[in-house]
Amino acid sequence: MRTRPFEEVYETIERLRATNRRTEKEQILSEVVTNVLLNVLLFAYNPFWHFGVSKVRARNCSKVNKKLGHSAATFFEHLHKMRTGRITGNDAVLLARKLYKTHGEIVGLILNKDLQCGITIATINKVFPGHVPTFNVALGKPFENRLFDTSKVWYASRKMDGVRCLLVREPKNIRAYSRTGKEFKVLGHLCNSLPPFGTGYVLDGELCLVDDKGKEDFLGCVSLVRKNSGTPTNIRMYVFDCFSLPVFQRGSGNVLFSKRQRYLQKLMKLLPPKFKRIKQHRVRSLEDVEQYYRKAVEHGWEGVILRKDTDYRAKRTADILKYKPMHDVEVHIVDVEFGEMFIASEKKRRRVLKSVLVDYKGYDVKVGSGWTQRQRLYYAKHPDKLIGRVITVQYFEESTTESGLSLRFPTVKVLHGQDREL
Image: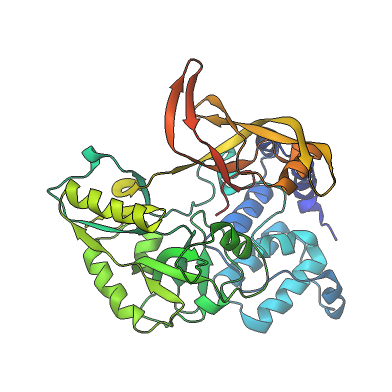
């Protein structure tokens, strides 16, 4: 059932679903500026708001006889009570069913934190600046000699080839998030292992699938954590930092990295073997850094992470330096190119995706390596499903050509949606 205050919201969602182009989605949002839409976007995408219930199916609503008011104000008031814990447990489930009966699909979309129309927080905030709080984490910069200040204390560690994950232990809830704030649904075996402590804390690390030889399976890990159900118990979490919940919520703290490591060492004694602490090694000079990097290359690691012994800051800074032979960058696909390939299983040539053109710092760069045969066949038939999407490209180094900037040996690593997902 669609109530009048939400008709325009439903129409907007349908228009957003009808296009894959990010610029068209932004235009659609800019044309519909109502308090109801702004509230729907805030309740659905605020990464720090949760309601304690999942989507309520319409068939469940037949069991509910009591009706609620249809006003938008009443609707959002009920959601506010659920997110602040004033209504919980079975009462929250019953309330969600009643809301579904009076307001329809929008209830399930909000409770699942996704309007399923191909927009993200970045999309919303581009149209309505600062409307939805962002989920920020500490990020590093590529290593350069000039950034390594030898007057400071630094630690080096192995860079794992996994999926970034933050386990957030609140007093009453435990949630797992990607670096962009997307909630992982399949990590109950990790979340349920975290003991309560004080006002809450956060473990920051990498989810990895690791074989007996210590080699990571990055794509296999991505495939598992993207699912909405199941329990991939073979995933381990390699933890490199921990800090209090208030520090995470503020985005900054005043506890040095070395002290946070001592807290982490104590906490690890309470956690099962599926949690591993990434060991930190003191490095005092560029010679130490180069020696550790050579070790990484010899062992086939993805690279080395250098961390300055300083306070936590949830943004990209030179306090964290990434030293690795290959680099990653997230870029948007702007066009596609096709060609022919011999398909051995069919014993004939087929039209396939040859490469994509991506926007790298304002220049078109061709990325043809890294696509699977299945992807090449599928996107040759559905190129519209690629245009505007984000891919993580792995490359050796930036280069300069006659036409401008380019990348040496670019290879697609991960295909995302309209924005980076993991």
